Length: 253
Image (spheres, rainbow, N blue to C red):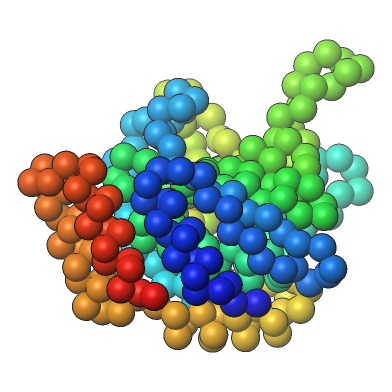
């Protein structure tokens, strides 16, 4: 389902003003998926993100975003758990246009926070880019938090782990070289996902083709790149950067 243009305009404007954004779209069933997008400082949890040079805004097409969302897989750590998609086809369809605007609008010193509430539970995490990589760091998938307390043994356990595919790997911290299995680093130009066991694969293929037509106008993209250059060179402050971004995105609608 394609989001109403007026709603998307409100979403983009709210993002630039730094407020919480709600993007709502209908899922495959009678109930709805609710998406909450916020921009926040990478220092909010004293994580390894602080030491990365973020490459924001993120230059990526909507079709490529669909491919990234489809590629994300996880598996529960308990006996009998099977590998599953992080996002269903309906959720991909909901998220792709919202993330497309968020990626283009995130400022260099912020990361994207996503919360998706669906029938299966809440999926939440951070999204950001450095160099030529797109990072997906989840803390909850379908209502299951990554770190859970074992009441029997009294220690924390991992309830699931991401499953890297071609062009993806786990993040490894610089200090203790610890692998973080809730954090996937993907090549920005990720190879086309070949998941055969995802529901309604044809629907995803159709969505990718449809999304490829919804990219930013080259002239507007050039304006955004020039604006980012001015901000990076400290020729304009963050407030002016956001104001000019808003004006450029107004031209999209």
